[in-house]
Length: 198
Image 1 (cartoon, rainbow, N blue to C red):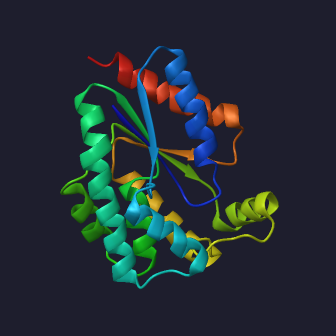
Image 2 (cartoon, rainbow, N blue to C red; image 1 turned 30 degrees about the vertical axis):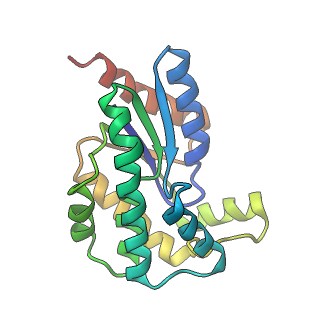
């Protein structure tokens, strides 16, 4: 099973991934946790650009695609083949949303990724207005907002995430301003339904 947590920066993806992983493992399930960008060479270059300045759009997109191809080949694909649950903090939907906000056509980006990356069994999109998410980031980190965390661009990315959710029956949009427990309850209910399906 492939479970993906998405949303713009500052919505609490990592917090909810931690809680979902703990719940799954507490139920005796074998979980592989990962994130994108990865810690591989392409992912490291992308993380540097978050601090030093964004790369030209096509170069940035190619790095995301190369990082994901490696991720699918080395971790996601083998883990799914072995019957494990893969839990991701960001996946190709972030590329569609963030690169789409930079001017690429979202449908073309979706097709390019889905040509090699398996679709998730559940996609959880944690949603909140960009102004709220940036205020949350600043409250937690001070003024340390990275180059991807520009409110206007994040709002464009948010709009693309919500559009993707409308078109995918495996997607669930969750209000990221709800309590942590309420968010987790919604995610766990969807996973329970998947685990009990024939």
